[in-house]
Image 1 (spheres, rainbow, N blue to C red):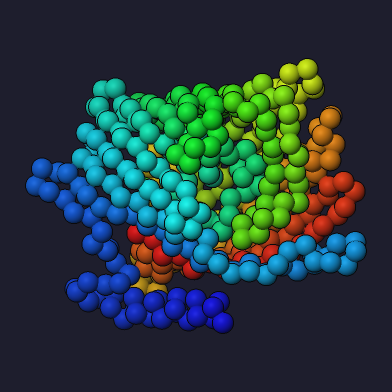
Image 2: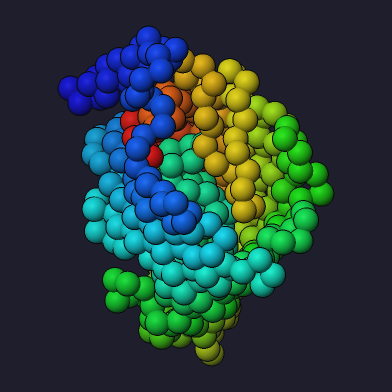
Length: 387
């Protein structure tokens, strides 16, 4: 059985790492040689993320007695990124997800000590901290929260500017037009994100952020729907349905995060407003709050207004416990059948060296749409290799 093989492999890696923790030779769990640097400071390298997931569903029976979900295990991501850069001068990135068959971040960025960073190409839109700011290798839970998945716009082609030279502040502004590299999502988006750190030390970080965007679809349509924090299924328990005659789509996100050593507490409120020609406007919103603690004492890195992965200090790795509550409300005047959903998630992460992570989540869902209550429980496992 594949899931047993995953667990056995993870345990073997942990023991291998502990056995060679003191050895001076190359370690499978230490730094991997995926980057070359020239004498002039130019770096050439690779980044990757291979994630294999298992989802098992329970208590998901419909009124007619049928089951809504199917137990599944499959690759969640097969991401590979290449980069060429000289820190502080330029950065070229090319990325592709071979599982989803979509282009990731592909851009040219020019950096200036005075003026900040100017980037052109395809990159993430700014609203939704969990989606736009946190990399796929650094997620505390297997999947992003309900409201982050609902609001996130994805990647678009465009140009943006980032400025981090003012102590305690992070600024980003973007103009995106021309859709994406798949040839989809034609339209125009204006977006911005600002983060303030009233406290930022080696052990403590307070992160307060606001992000907003304004989008104009060329096809004058929109649709909001959310998977139940389990992405091996295509089933959505809440869904606004197709919204026509759309003029603009406005998104807003408010971020608050506190890190105190190995403790990380964060929350976010997200809202989306759809302006429709000749029809009532449509609005949906949601929020989440979460807490995570690394039992082995490590803390997450913090750079460019985002928290990174835990880097273990011990040969046996690092262990983290986490919990999250998330909620979305897709009901509004003319769309009273969008539905409402709340999820409770508890999880444990085992960071095995610098490149392997084993995650386990248990999600308890409470959803109601069109008078039907469906409250599945979801057990999820992931084995992740990243570099």
